[in-house]
Length: 299
Length: 263
Image (cartoon, rainbow over all chains, first blue to last red):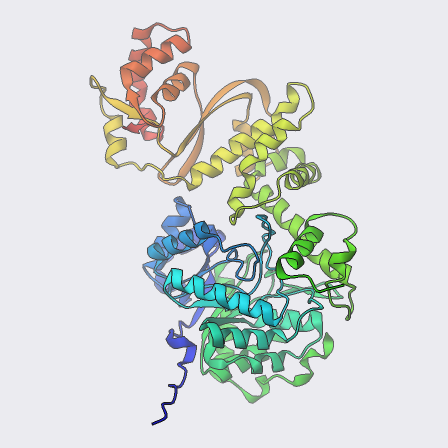
């Protein structure tokens, strides 16, 4: 008798945490003096590297937050696409932090951060080739084996593409998710930024991503430099991103939403107000919020 | 030209991002042409972002130095350091680890030119103490250290203490920087300080020579109070009995400041 594979679980079976924000030290004092019921957010995301080896006030705040709300660990230094070997000390640090924080999941980016022992502290784009796909998939499996959980990978913003690339990023991510079992953190702002910078259709990109692999969404505000957009996380979410966000929520049937704000950080209440826009979009899922395919025309 | 492998492609790209000025042809040739930007302009976005990010990170760790010398001079210091020691560690916290050493090694001759390196040293100490395992009031090791001196008592300086001998008094400048006030030019004079933390409060304490010497003698591993006092007396040309008496009086305050704990 033929056996059919079970239908894939939405979000890899991980929970829909609702609406969250990035935990930043500018808000530590506010969060520590405000009762959790008044925070106005369902969950927090931390930048893992900011808490590794940190036993100061930041550790106390994290401990307090984690006792009240789900926390997700979001890294920037895994370099899953790097050609240097994976850094075992880094993976140990992530595992150690996870033991303390008990995160809902652990994420990083589809990128490389350095080579030959040096670190650019940036999220550099991959050559989207068959060879690099096999390379990254193998490393994802190594990380998942080390951490004992699926790795969640985010699409980065990018400002160049390699000539050698053989497929669009959305196809690369979809295949990576399929062959490695990783989940995807779909940064809708990054789709918008990269679509502008490279002239592709953001709607087609989102539609090419397998909805059941999407575990989380990022929202943020980029900077317009005229010839290109830069992923600066320093402003409100642009109007053009909201229909893309609505499309993701519609396709997934509901997925955790996280607002990132890393420069010119406003008061916490302003973050919650921005997050309320996401709540409104998802509550309505109005037909008019569906994006037009001409969205990419400005790029 | 044959397509480079992943390692080669990443090496060429990384070199193009790290170096200033014109991008090497072989890196530019890797980048797809098209759209409103040329391949070298696209690489420049990453190159500019790399420098800006690291300079900003150093500025965040060395705010008093930045305030004192101004943004432009600080950027020159930081750019020289980044070029000499491009980051290799995954954490940006590690980036500033050798900044003071770099400023010291590259300074022109003269006593006054030692100021930036010494200021960087005390600011790095503050960053380290902020992240270290700290002592808290109420902890047994702190409370025991703050009790009356008993024969044979061994004390240590906690991991959250840094002792520094400096040629300038940086305390007013650091206080002004913390308050967001204009920089105060540090006075040139021999200065012994401890950067310490109790709870989550980090402070810089000016220390008299015998107190500084006593803390040094206690060390991280700990020492009997009387033995350390004798070493402190010798180091500061004081009489041993008087030094031990002064330490007995100061020891409870030192414990409350997070400077000592029981070994």
